[in-house]
Image (cartoon, rainbow, N blue to C red):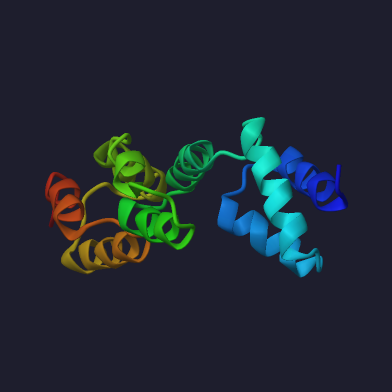
Length: 144
């Protein structure tokens, strides 16, 4: 076993990595490309490195942190995950945005003014939710 393989195992013991991300980490540790390629091949053969598992874990983690499908899709594409839309479609985004909205409005009157509506709209846009979904959820809230 090479030291690149050992280091990769240590990294994967902490959390899931995409192949691209793991290659980058190993390059930073100045392993040769041959060592990295061999380690990646070995990790994949034992199913220790799996981009599908990474994408599922990443999507679950980010959606629970309050990020929307646009944000998550962008990051999955950055990790060169094939068919990233598949992982996005597995989540009920309306329930996700409602959970965040209710958490934000926990100590406030649930009736929105137009200023508060705009504030929430911008917040959800920055978090990566599509405009049609935001409008759907916010229109169902009472507006003064």
